[in-house]
Length: 250
Image (cartoon, rainbow, N blue to C red; front, side, top):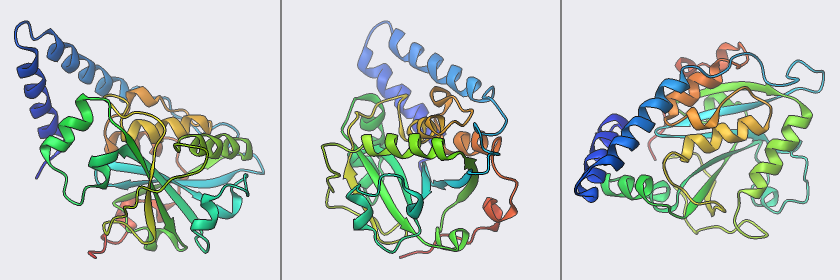
């Protein structure tokens, strides 16, 4: 099984081989990786901005393997004219994740797809998953954290998500995955994907926009993001990963 640790070791080896002589590039990359991992343990704690206000509402940080996403109540989406909302009519939540276009959509992730995604700037994709209540039972995720944000935080969060889609309107790539609840679709992303600006950094950046005390550049892995999110999460046992059912095989 290709774990994150094994991937990092192999990626460093490939990068070393490509540099040839001084290997200063891999050493810098390894140092940067180690620094980011250590910094992730120093992330701020405490609630998100104005999360105790009367208009505060819940969003959810969801873990799916290496990737994470943020689930937002669709009926509270401020921009009711956004075309994507009509594509998932009947959903209670929309979960958004981001990643390398090829790696994210692949039914089987390989080492070389991972190396390509991490070491070279590549096109990106946004994965949108429609979810319904009860969320803890129907998300079929490996972990979930409930986070409270303010109404203004929601406006910033949703506006940031809308801007992440390439073009004036969301453009589907034509792909979906059987590894997530249906319906789900991939869309072309606006920004380029490269290390250390990767999938879990993207979700952390959206949480930061929402007013949560998290440093996106310190986040690399899904487990780091879930730990950081737990520091400002709602104390609600139904969102604990241990309470979630195993993912369905489709």
